[in-house]
Length: 114
Image (cartoon, rainbow, N blue to C red):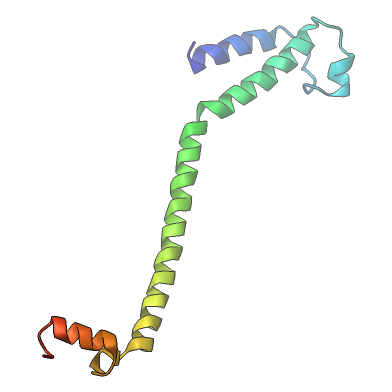
């Protein structure tokens, strides 16, 4: 059954109630006798609400996840940029120090130091 067919079925059942249906689970709903068209209509209204919510749930969740992922990536990029600038500033000129073991090893690897 398609969503449109389900909605039409629900509309027909809800229309059987001569008066508006109370909210499912409310005191007014509980007071209605079993089989009362309004009681059935209230259950169908609640079920159709859940079904409609589920109809596009996958799409809504995917869009929400994509938005969160983009926001997280932007935050990571900002943090990376700040850390990279701080790292460059902190270690600026270190590779020029011949006495630093990493600089010596780097220069040796590049053939600058014998």
